[in-house]
Length: 344
Image (cartoon, rainbow, N blue to C red; front, side, top):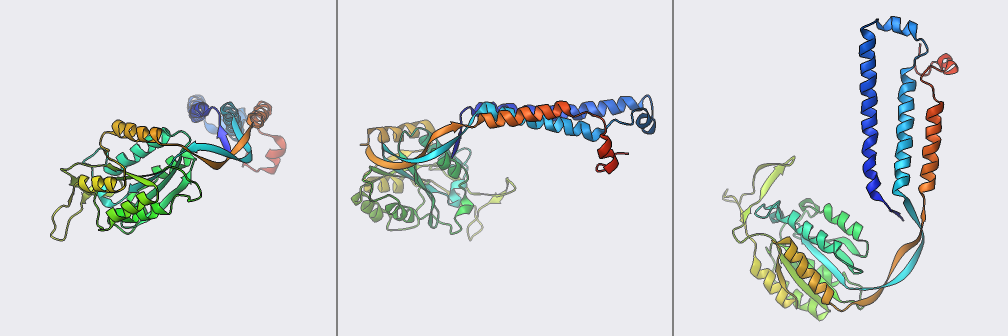
């Protein structure tokens, strides 16, 4: 396992393509000026040892040297030992609705992106808690098992989309049922299930499963995304809207947030309903719940004894700079004899 101590230095990598573009611009300018004084064949006779390939090789070596030196500034570190540590926190599982209705744009930019923003912000505010993610539409699927790796949680969440579940619909009951087996029964932690959805539910036994969850020590909080007025479901190709979803009669389908079912689920799950259209208020509400929750001690494995690796990158960078200084921009005689690069 590795970590980057100063990732801000990676912004300096933008210098490398700029240097390369400037090099090409100067090369083009030189050739343009040379043509004003003599033709190409005469220039070759006047400077027979001039090598364009060597110029490209030198700038490439120089840019590689810069690359390694910039990486050394960021100071990559490598974890050398995996150890078990004890932490205190709660287990929180997010059930994210990825049904087609979640791409409705009655909430900007759309319901799904809004839901992902909320979950990401909550994860960023977690302390030593563990987090897991379930996605669901007509069926539910595990996206991320319970972990303390928040970076992985945000990465998986960013890639969540409506194409990940082929069976469409909105089966909140299936998400709750999966959550019942998601938590580790050996760890007696405080457990929360946060359902982020527009509230469309096509099943009938959702409330019974919510009550079953409370019996197993799981509190269910629901976050509603969308408006009562609703909006159409856009159909897109290459990022452009080409139409809207229609029903069997050819009428445009308007999907509305069902706030009542989300309230009922939260009440049955011994939790609370939160309107998620205001991001900061939603994050504050969830944060308040988690801060007031009793923290349980659990064990987790993580890498430790991180050792600096910058010296390797400095060494390679300096070596490349020395090679760049030793390289001349004229043809090498023995290479010219081999004619590897068509140097005449």
